[in-house]
Length: 457
Image (cartoon, rainbow, N blue to C red; front, side):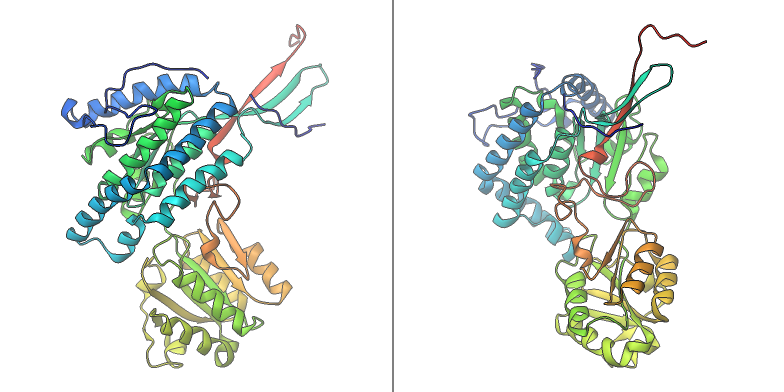
């Protein structure tokens, strides 16, 4: 019989830092850096990053949990200590982004303030507290011939993360990959270049202080877009690509990558208000799901309301959204309730606004909600508000999304809220991982077979 078990399993790499001069332990953030882009083209830069990543991976695979935790704890300390320098670097990015006409939603994703810097550091602390998945025995069994077989979690290897706008991804992805034993090459968006570099520096200093190779976490040190294409072709070095960003980025990576991709597609998230929902709950949950932060992937983009409950439930929910400054675009039934509701077109049902806009439709009960989501959803996160257990069970069982919720805001679609410490993204794929991608999802396994001179007849 197979029985799940759990077990767990620092090498110093003194390779010189060529990409840029890193402030060593005890130094401050003002050490001058040497831009790598002066040393070669994008292809040469990615080859050098890949070479170092493979060398670091050999050491990180065998690193003790205590060493990885020490690196993360020190990085969290450094992020707190260098908070003002990180915010100053972010101010440079924000100034350039405003001048470049970046949307309000993307500016919100880019912004770092004291609370968000602290949240980054706290996220690292949370990851330290989580169990190390590397070395865990998933299951084991014995065959009639005496062979003992175990499946053991191991790192994926070298992961490339390509992302836009959010500098906090630098910390989250770097920390999750490190704790799960993976080396990571980070390619942040050009708009967050200075912020990400300041954060990555703290992570690398934490690695150095723990006696681990700094090259376990590398940031592509150029804004040249050709570097993305080079990463997508880097099969010699990369084992996995994780893109985080808008439709254009995801489609490009999915189409062009020769490296396996774990993708986070659009967050076309729905909230269905059932006729058996408490009106006050529906009003508050929908308002939070849409308006808490409109630029996150878990923000609700479509509101579905039971047609039989329009007279009782729709008006208070829509009025709250309008009061909060949300533009509502509705079908004929929804527009009839409030003259402020604008006309929705087919495009609205498939648009991830990432803005204070929501589409709204009347549907024929839970069946209609399930059909609407199947037609227009992206398989990210969808929620039902109802006090009817049977209706909730149908929705949870039949809506085929990575995350389905009952009486909860879609803004809980987040690795930290799931207790995973952080996330590298919300996977809308069906192979390997689905939903928040945390430590366990960043591992694969190998099969260990033990015999006693056993031969096959």
